[in-house]
Image (tube, rainbow, N blue to C red; front, side, top):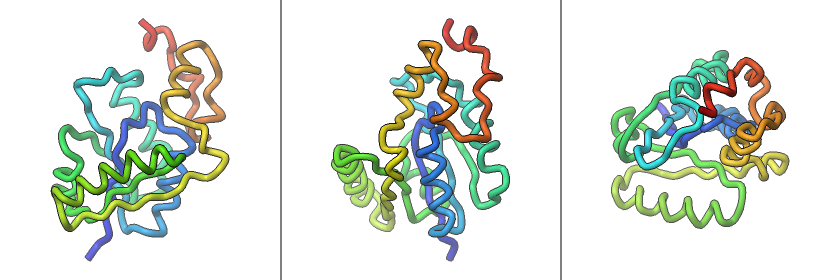
Amino acid sequence: MEKIAIFPGSFDPITKGHESIVLRSLKLFDKTIIAIGENADKEDFFSIELRIKWIEEVFSEFHSVSVVKYKGLTIELCKQFNAKYILRGLRTSADFEFERSIGQINKNLLPGIETIFLLTKAEHTAITSSIVREIFRHGGDIQQFIPDKLDISKIDRSKLLE
């Protein structure tokens, strides 16, 4: 049986921390599906279409990595793809407490699911999508925080900040 993991998140934008988690997951799973959740209560900064394009670009050489967008519960997406694992990255102890609660609820809702936590590398601990968005929003250079394959200079800031 194929080992399939779902890596859910907003990836708004994808960071070097996200990239590292996915690359490290390649040794653990046959397939890693990066799942961009659509949340009606949350306003996106970068469009889902752009985030999908970026993720496809970053992992273009890895055929075991794919990206999808979804609405609803992550466990329903797991059922759809027959994934038995939910992949999560942990930066801090606060992340652990939050993710542990969600993992336990997911296990109650879908007993066959396992949540796998990977610790971020020390150099990525401070990087969050929220901070990266704020830096970008205020005209800062975010290139050092996003995957090297992405060229943020090609993004028209004026269209995003309207």
